Length: 423
Image 1 (cartoon, one colour):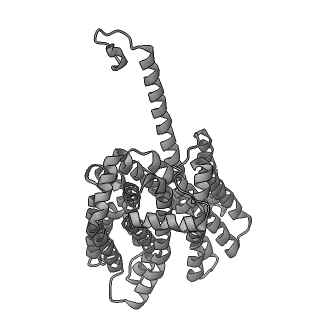
Image 2 (image 1 turned 180 degrees about the horizontal axis):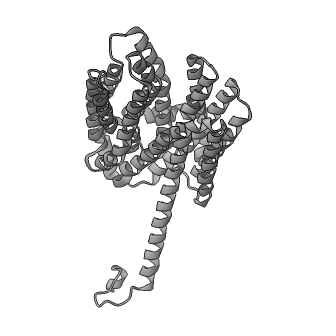
Image 3 (image 1 turned 90 degrees about the horizontal axis):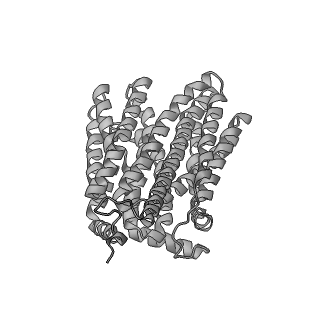
């Protein structure tokens, strides 16, 4: 039998047979296309994070300077999450029908148009509607990119790829607030800059070839939608808890902790440093934790970081009078739980059949949004009625509850291992 049919090179150093040259060239070309697709998608996510991170403090500052009450200011900020929740039940069918690329392009375009419209008319309800539209656009963008990345990522790189997704969003979200001071130059400048950056990133989407999720289930009726949601929940309910918890954590820290910090005597600058320390901790450890989860398993890493985060926030409750000690503790807490959302997505992907991945990603987004809506509200109630108890305790308890749920759900961990082996 001729060995050249099975081996890409001959022992005597002769040139590769032409069939192998063609094969290797095709494989290299496919790998380059996959890498380009991956980096374009996570770059889009970074710009989306930038626009979200910029809008939160920017609009709050503008309304505060105009004398709007803090409660109405907070109400306006909920527009983003209301948009996400409103559109969530309707996102899966267009994704399956038209593919990933059109959904992402639509989401990006909606965000760009909304950003451009902000300077045209400064009105509370007009800006609320624009934030709602940005929530819809961002959710379409994230749902499409998130599902696309989880669908083409091999199991041994899934944690790494989703962590890079979370890392790029986190970096964009952290850089966004730095644009807020531009409002002192001209109130419209941050909106214009953000819309231009989004447009530049959006154009690169047209370089990608469209792809579709696996089509083995019907999505045409509300009954089928409910059935899919129910099936996805049965497979991976425990994996939706980390995104829920991270939404609660992020929104309560950014929305309620500044109020609590000022009430216990912290300076505004100290509150900013503390929040930045937590964000940097999450960014620094995002990728290492994703790689470790590929090696040691998602459930094991999640239990370690959730317990560690609960302990760090509990310790923070005793360090409120020492800003630098509190800064270090929140940095460590960020290192622990800053990857909770991305690891939750990876864990969901391990547990979920591939044809239900769009539904699973959708439910992760819904869980995050519910946590984001609940965080500031419950945090505010806690601050108002439990004045002698540290705000950090509510976060510590929440993380501990999710830790216990993930730890005790051994069946999910076994299914994840079996699913990984079968891929």
